[in-house]
Image (cartoon, rainbow, N blue to C red; front, side):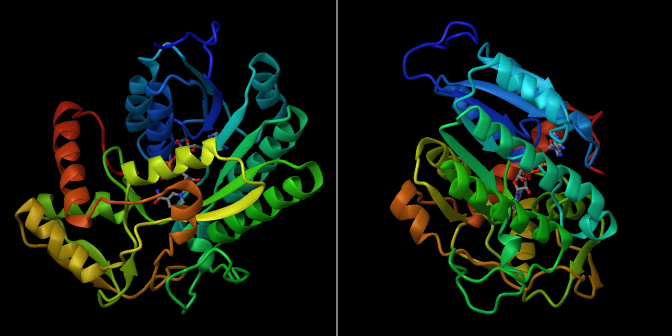
Length: 337
Ligand SMILES: NC(=O)c1ccc[n+]([C@@H]2O[C@H](COP(=O)([O-])OP(=O)(O)OC[C@H]3O[C@@H](n4cnc5c(N)ncnc54)[C@H](O)[C@@H]3O)[C@@H](O)[C@H]2O)c1
């Protein structure tokens, strides 16, 4: 059923997926390839975490003949333009970014480069090459320390509390401008703490099971009452692909689970899955961290048919199953940054 990059089949779309070596990008690219689309993947494969994990992600995608990969920095406009010159890109799923709140406080320039400049390059090329749909990945962190819950897409998000969040909000504004001036169809996605197999090794849903199983103390910031709206990767990917398929002008969507989980409950659930009690290294709340994330997903449900279904216990179990088999088979990969 799969067409090669040179022989296009009917109904087959050519989709540019940025950040395809990363956690979410690799899952989105894989699902598009499975349904028969042509995927042009771009990633600079940076060392924010062990690049061997990213190489393993690329190995999965390279098994599909309709996958074509370019190892490039998206901030390099001329090189990215060549991709558009040489391929009939129809849709873009833009997932590449410098992620992580705390490192953005230490090195904001990196975030300006990979989040703002890279996105502006893609928007400019999307305009020039008349791309039919552009999906931009923003973040739930744009809601900052918003007190009203659940978070709705039309809340005022003018008060980001980290450089990371500020760059994400900036890209939403740039994308709106390209919609307004050039009629570009843009769906902005605000993900809420995505976790699961191939997860990001700097995030709690990866670090906590690993530390608890190794008998290492987990860093617990605050008293455990902070909450996160953990969202399982497969639920998220369905919503993201629906956004790639749906042209709506300019819309913003929360993709979360709409079920916030406290840090205390999160730790207890992992203890049960791993079968070990956690050692706790109690620390104060970190600057830039938010107290609550909680998505109102009714808009995504209405316009994208989004319906997350994986509960935290099930999702963490699926992660744990992957983690054990992955690290057992790939002892050369470290989960440290
Ligand atoms: N994982 C989450 O919970 C979460 C939450 C909110 C938002 N997001 C957003 O979702 C997207 C994907 O996140 P992820 O968790 O998969 O992160 P990830 O770090 O695993 O993947 C991002 C990828 O982008 C690549 N990249 C970064 N800068 C680049 C550049 N200048 N040129 C080319 N490639 C570059 C990296 O090499 C990496 O492989 C990001 O935009 C992130 O901000 C993720």
